[in-house]
Image 1 (cartoon, rainbow, N blue to C red):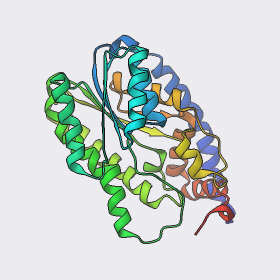
Image 2 (cartoon, rainbow, N blue to C red):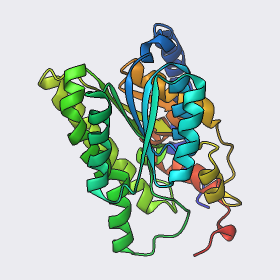
Image 3 (cartoon, helix red, strand yellow):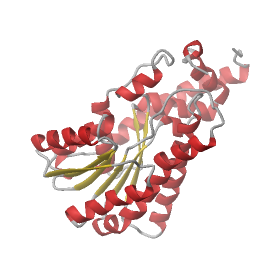
Length: 300
């Protein structure tokens, strides 16, 4: 491994003091936020990728808050179980539609079903993702197109289809992204490319909404490693870092959307500090990231 230069070492010291000030400022500012579960009572919410993991947990939180919920994923049997649990937890209503987000017609049909069910929409939570795994980039352009369709273009398609209803309700778009959409990680070329695309599209769209006085908020959720079954299986034996709980992560996403926050970071320090290091000492960040991988366990 490359040794750190003197300049990079000095940058580390500067970063240490800067991080302290930033963290204090964050906690002072966040203390003014006031989330109440009642904010979601009776709200009409679409949650994609909701048969397992973070999406499933978001559906359960929304059910406890008394929301109307429409969930989607590929596997019908899993969605049926989630809907049944949501109704037991107190959802105002709970429905599902199953299909693949690789098909843009299906992505549009989800929004159409919400309109048929409720006549409007208050919150669109975009959470679905193509199955991911760690591997070296193998130059498979066809697979890159598939991942782009699922992880990015379907998000755009659903946003466009939802906008008339969201404009009428003054609603919210919540985009579940990743630290891998802010920082380059090895072995995630396909996944990371789509997450960077989400940041670019929705951050630019947010500015246009502001300039046109469009009363629709966009919340980008930058997540670290979460202990979903899919993520744990993907990194098993290769990545040596701890994962945050999906239940708490799901609640933070909902809070961020309800409060119409620009971005949320979960867990905060494990996602914000790498961004600071990226800007101050990118070679240091590369070194830190690479040390967390057991490359011998990775299949080429």
